[in-house]
Image (tube, rainbow, N blue to C red; front, side, top):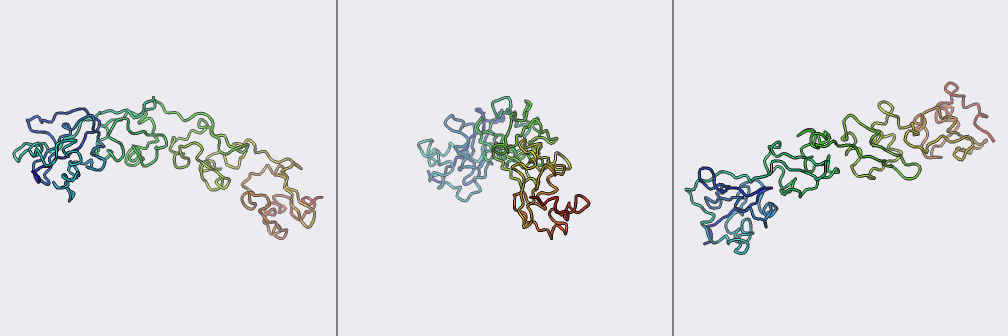
Length: 355
């Protein structure tokens, strides 16, 4: 009985039973011509509850019809060893591949359909809440194997698409990137219910220095995609912002620059704890010199923006910048402003050097 039987086994997507007979009376299915002629496979005849699409389309067969017969080992001996159809047609799960030849080999004279496409639901709901997405197969004319099973498991409700998946090369967003198809950030194109930004406060940082961020005060024209996921991931608490980012146009500071938004050096707009140090207060900077000490007060310089001094010519870290009088005379460090024009000249020693 060997060398005479082949049965191509596969399973449907999200489907009910379908007719195995075409309108002209011929058997409907997928016609295989190797390794022997006239073998037809029908999804409908394999639509049983104990099987799912993944039974066959997770290693035994590709999603595209007739891909298997391109393989060199697609021969009867492979079936007898448990490969391809032989994984089930072993005499236990289903009749053995080396018996009942005529159940698969229908003869050269049979009228066979070129290909059978399993029935599926035209409209599928992704998600259960009001924010769910109504997916239409009719509006996505790609072949089945373009999405199944590489992007979506061919079983309704099997995939969980999260907000964090938006913008990644996963699920719908493999195509909906603004180039292959409309960008995922155009929310109303998919979500039938209005999608609003998350409410509440998101704190960046800890303690008194934390910045309270609110979505409702940030309404970019381009929608969510202007910030997510390129600047900020969708995972709360994942973003780490340090002071150097203020100057590198990263995270918040892509927008918060002097030209198109509140400048980052307007500290009190975000940092509620940022108040200019008081004269003689604990935050006064004391520079010890061979002459009398110099006391610097931010308060007396508060009419100037922070970025006029930081990070150049003064580093943000206290004591990091070394100052020499000879360099000040050349217009460096304090001498950049204290030149007799913008502010009193550095030669007026007593204005800075005090007991």
